[in-house]
Length: 261
Image (cartoon, rainbow, N blue to C red; front, side):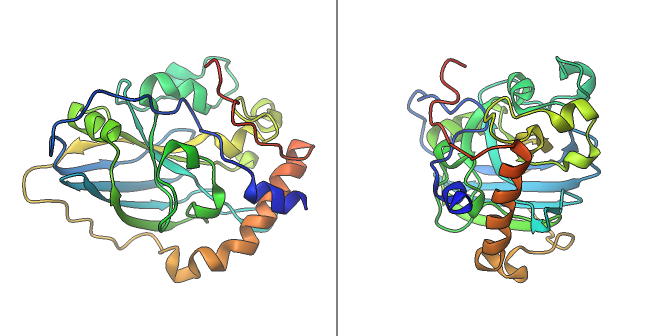
């Protein structure tokens, strides 16, 4: 029952949720944007992302490899987002590890990459900040290719046009952390380990020259080719139970977890 509750519980945001912005001008963010990811927490991961915007419709492609692959023998889900409305940069351990535990956690990274504007979920799942930690619709495993087309929120369009859009892929292997960080709880959802919500990859989105993006998708294995969501369902359930065990208690999502931040 705990495992079932983990997947069905309401999601909480991995950072400050997007605030309502001023009305956006039509087509103001049209164009192609791209980034090469930085490995934020020395995980060995790498990848690239592209965002093509036509009107208010975006096609987002993310290639990632070298991520945390399993946890308790289950595929490790990696929630991912377009973060907005801050500096439009990626944090570093040297500059942003405020508590000196050897890791940049999600909150420490917010001044650089900002709040969540869009959740990069799979299929027809919710793309809003409310779905930020819904692991059942997140790509999973050590490598994946994600490609989805959907209506982009005005707040995210504004951020892309302003040059402050950043894609962040979350979730790192606790085995690679310092003893202090590996035993710490998430500062967003204390029932989970710090590693479950920490950023792994980060990339500032920059507009490309006219003509669009050639994604050249070749490196990462497609999540769909490995069974898609259905093929990973049992793995996600097992991971949910594993994270709960690591946290030492039942998972109780609280929608007000970020209140006051």
